[in-house]
Amino acid sequence: MEDAKEEIRARLPIEDVVGQYIELKRAGRSLKGRSPWGVDKTPSFMVSPEKGIWHDFSANKGGDIFSFIMEVEGVSFREAMEKLATQAGVELKRYSGGNRKVAERKKRVRELLELSCRFYQYCLTKNEKVCRYVFEKRNMTKGTAQTFRIGYSPNQGKALLQFLTKKGYKKSEMDAAGVLNRFGGDMFRGRMMVPFIDTGGVIGYTARILGQGEPKYLNTPETLLFNKGRFIFGLEQAKESIRQNGYVVIVEGNMDVISSHQAGVREAVATSGTAMTENHLKILSRLTPDVRLAYDGDAAGVKATERAIMMAGDLGVNLSVISDYHGAKDPDELIQKSEKLWQEAVAKPRPAVDWLLDKYEENLDLSTGVGKREYADVAMKLLRNVPHAVERKHYEQQVARKLDCSIEDLREQKIVEPPKRLKKVESGVESDALQGIKDSLQAIVLYGGVTEIKGVEVTENEVKIAELELVYDARYSGWTKEALEAEARELLKRLKVESAKEEVERLTREMEALGDSEEDQERQAEILKRIMVLKKG
Image (cartoon, rainbow, N blue to C red; front, side):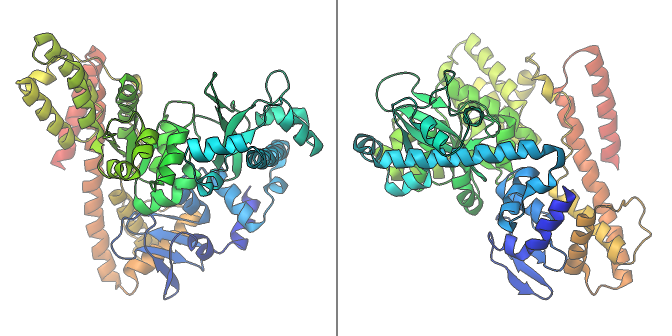
């Protein structure tokens, strides 16, 4: 697909792609703007039209148009490529080789689902009873219905099948799109239709029954396009607000998302018909580290929050919980009561660990020895998933005060080992500080004429090399060779310190995840020796 990438690059100037998201101003040969991730106080986002490269000095990120769309939209490389190919008018199927048949099938399914969505929207406008349900009972505005492309599936049984057949689609294509049931008729009948939409358009549906009956909601099965472990409902409509305001709100239901957007909280999204997965969190973490959970306070909500904390630690996500529903059972019910109360609740979330510790306390009797022991067990098991030592110690002190004991007493407890996936922590992701130092050193080696720097490996990636020239021009243009050599020596010192610091943190996390077996104790001893060496420098 390299030919396709080059064709897209040739047709789409990087300043046009980036300019859709941030305002750029001329700064010499380059363009400058504010970081789309909101981490700079002054413009530190640079674009080089000549090289087709961008670099965000405040976040230490950079690359070409594909990496920019991946970062700013929170999508995979393939999705970024498809989005840019559409903008550029490039037909990817011409470059797909052996995947051409699959690409063609996906294209047909997308076109079919787009037609089905228009069909359902039309059917909604022609049914007065359903309109009353949508616009009066659900209190949905016409603008919201258009934004989320709300429709209605007729109750005849084969209405959509007949419509799509007339448009030239085969039953096998309809089946691949997930719109037929096992008897060959319409999957969705007599339901309010809410489409699943990604960057390329409609990929499936969630359908709500209008009267009594089961299931209340019926979702598209997994298809060529729809994967419930990756799809996040409302993300396409929420991305811009998430980028601008720096946080995302995860609610439980799709109707909660729609109500929240209508109430002015357009950062709301939901996982569809499945528990939150690590894939969901990874996608959201590309857009913001501030994730706010709007889960119920029941047992299921507590378990979901526990799972989220276990996943969040490795991804650098800050989790908090929106909990003040003023007696309402969920966000949708609170919004019907007062949009302002929902907005205030979102603005004042509680750290997820604090919220969970309170929930544990509510469900246990801390006036008894058994209750205190159980509280200590669940609390310490939870705190093992808090990656930062200072934050973890804060909570340990809090739990110790509550139980009138010492931190040492808590740590001596035999806690059930955390899941095996935490045994070894090899994230492979460097901190922004370390990446920034390495970028600067490579830039000096490549463009500053300072070649005698031991331990600096220069990348062979052409996109990265072009990005490093942008880094050099912005930071070191006009510096003398003597000044660059002095800077390189200082950077090498900082590199050693930062690398050691990160290695200590990684080893500490690995050691905390080890158990009490003889093998694990030997590994703990090895880690302690290594940490001592690193700290001595």
